[in-house]
Length: 130
Image (tube, rainbow, N blue to C red):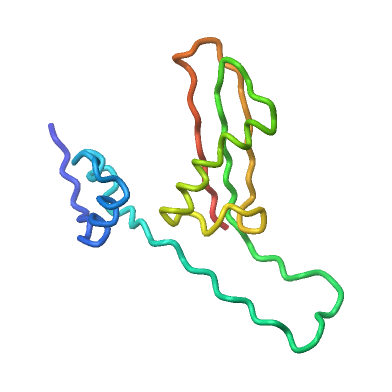
């Protein structure tokens, strides 16, 4: 028995995915139907204030939480574990899933868990939007 997915990917989404992943298979495109990858939003240029800001707490805006868990046979040092996530975070920024990878734009959590065998090694990623 085969299941037919009724959702249609619009041509703009399909072309955007093709630009990001030129060698994507049709299965990959089918798996991402309706995902709606959006382009990276440009940041507005901050204007300088006419007067100094009043002392006190700044307004806190809600930011997405990014949780990365690396399952490894040999665990990395803490600084190397965070450094290993840089290419992944850059990709998330590039495809528009997060606006930026700076600490003011995401809450980043990187954890490691030890596994017994090389075939159990993997990395999981979870993004939680406010």
